[in-house]
Length: 92
Picture 1: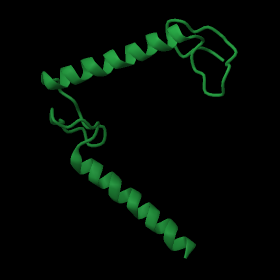
Picture 2: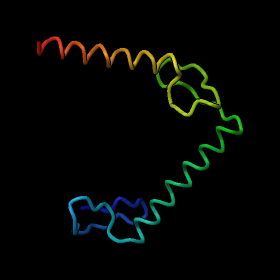
Picture 3: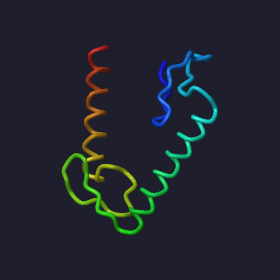
Picture 4: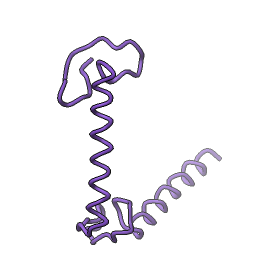
């Protein structure tokens, strides 16, 4: 298996079924990188960075933490509910 740390990339034999990194240091480096990426992303949003809805391409509010606008999220939820109801109706 190849280490998930972008800087490392070593081939290693995992000791457990869910091991992603070759050692603790690689895990710590990767975790810290993810934390800092989220920190700077949130900081940019608070400072007014322009973000676009993935579905309808409208500008997102700085207070919206999602990647889609509320109307698109509502449509996605309605579609999911409709799919669940259709599956339940088929089972009946």
